[in-house]
Image 1 (spheres, rainbow, N blue to C red):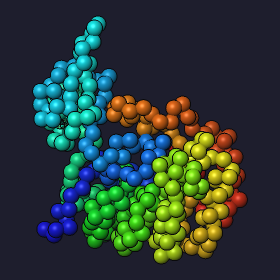
Image 2: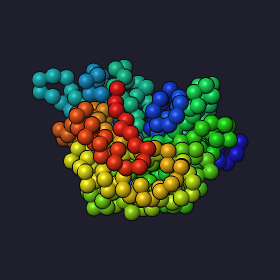
Image 3: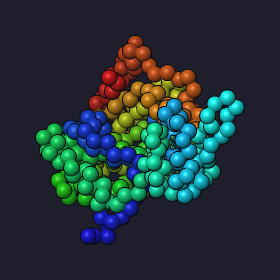
Image 4: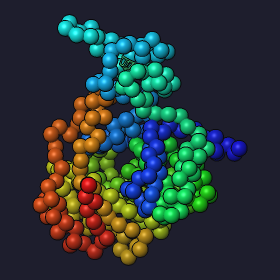
Length: 318
Ligand code: SF4
Ligand code: SF4
């Protein structure tokens, strides 16, 4: 067994039979850790590299078994005057990701976000669906979090999958060094590359980092001939105004020029699907009451997209 195949990383989910995030039927591998703090993030359990307990409070029956089995003192009970004690997670205690509490919970109320896996283990799961990739033109998409936050692990998974004849894609926010992207190009058939805001200050205000490095890496990937689909998450009050959209599309039009390797520009309307995960982590949903766009609003956005000589489309839900 090679040293690379034994490289370990932290995965928080593997989803099979996805029809999104690349062509054909895909296995999605989600890695933990992200350098951005996007307010609309639908995977809050992906941001930290630490193991995190997620609890479905409605399902808990207050049996206390998790307290008995946890070696790290993560679980506790709070007395309630007029009812059974309330299960709580001590977020200051360090979960070691053993998973014993989740396995012991009779109500299946607990999930541990984060599991250490080797490259070999991840690739074995990917290869279980080789038949579907062959018949659909699908493959594996590695995302997160931000996969370049664990560059050696992500690169080794892509490399091994590619050597096994699997189509490889990576979802990325673009916030890593150029050297990391350059080294991934030979093993990545498609980059799904986020462009959240063209204005550096507004990018920083909404994600925690400026966009210079992100734009620079995107321009270099296009110049190098990597296949790229640019994805713009459409967030009301953040980047859905004409200046923000036109600015991003103008930059892309100019940067990509005649690049046939720019395979698409997808606008992804905001949804609130990740909201319940914040509750499971005892966190406040940062988007407040922000709603998605109506069909009429999306039609207006579509008119802006059509003004540019780019392969744009809005990816509507459902
Ligand atoms: S995974 Fe292990 S360390 Fe973490 S909370 Fe559960 S029992 Fe405790
Ligand atoms: S083991 Fe499950 S049901 Fe029992 S207190 Fe813990 S979270 Fe609640």
